[in-house]
Image (cartoon, rainbow, N blue to C red; front, side):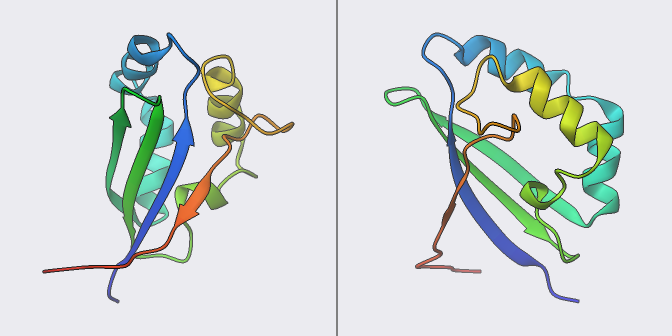
Length: 106
């Protein structure tokens, strides 16, 4: 099965850059395992420090992106853990905007 590419953007709150990086450097092993088990890989998050906008990119060999896993207990806990430093929805999920792929080169 060929991987699908998925990009989206999110926002961190002003002044939270270092904490965001710290928390991701210490990502929970059970969250990392869930993502891999769901076929999510080549997952990168980039920060535009001028706007506090995050750009995330991931490849999916399964049917889900990381944004589709909100019903799992570990993702709910992660969202709650991150809610104080990110723009979130009422359920603590990050405000996430899918991005349209307009160019790809292998």
